[in-house]
Image 1 (spheres, helix red, strand yellow):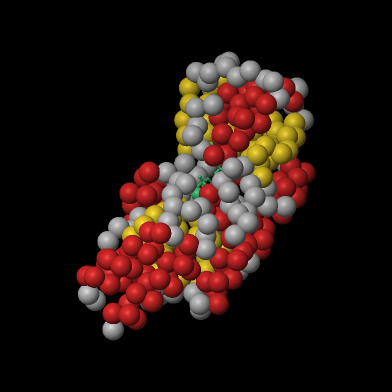
Image 2 (tube, helix red, strand yellow):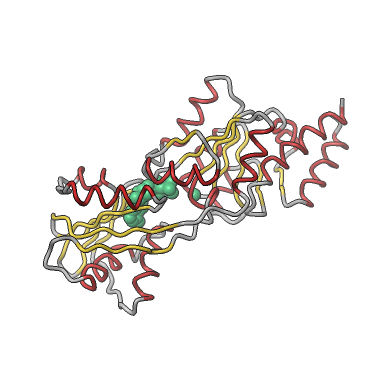
Length: 294
Ligand code: ADP
Ligand code: MG
């Protein structure tokens, strides 16, 4: 590989918003045969919106529930929390500060609001905290998730109090990019901490057949390693702090330029355009550059 053609290749890629950190990454990218895509913010726009609120059979009114929920999520930087807080303040509800807040990565949040203990998050969080969830609530959750929404359970002082859902939309270009990768004989897998049903619904919209769902934050890198041990040359594509270990582990880490700095630092390539077509573009450019060299 001549340094000159690598430099020319990197320069051409940069014109398309594909920033390689070093020549070795441009060389390696042509060999990628499996691409793992993070769901939120990578396959989807990552701007979820609060769509559904269901009050449980408690003495709380919807406004009470939203006030407690909003306060509990106020200190969280998770995109789901931001969606919830925005949805609630947009309804004209003012939020107090929680007296106590704990972020539980991959599960949700635990907070104290006005002397009440508030839990928001997954089924797993509720079972961990021994909160009983009725079959009818489970049913409502399943329906929301089947529509591709992320549903979150709320418990107040140790009992189920309600359910909220947020919806994110897939990027316009995700389906096309996935089809291009598959036409290049590259396996495409979506990975997420979100639940199986929501993940399958979103993946179907993007034309992705293989899904790894309910993966805890530390599990993403493990999944990358597992594929590598099967002999795959893996590119991981993500945007979040959660994705950083997986981006660093993969043969090629690709960070969305629209994402967190932590992800960009861990990655080998930054995709300045949020467009997933940059993935097949990068692989094609690498193949072309390396053919010219030989
Ligand atoms: P992702 O990979 O989609 O970013 P995470 O691992 O961050 O997912 O979170 C997994 C799941 O945990 C979410 O789908 C959600 O149900 C729950 N969760 C995480 N953070 C929060 C939060 N701040 N409030 C409520 N639920 C949360
Ligand atoms: Mg993400």
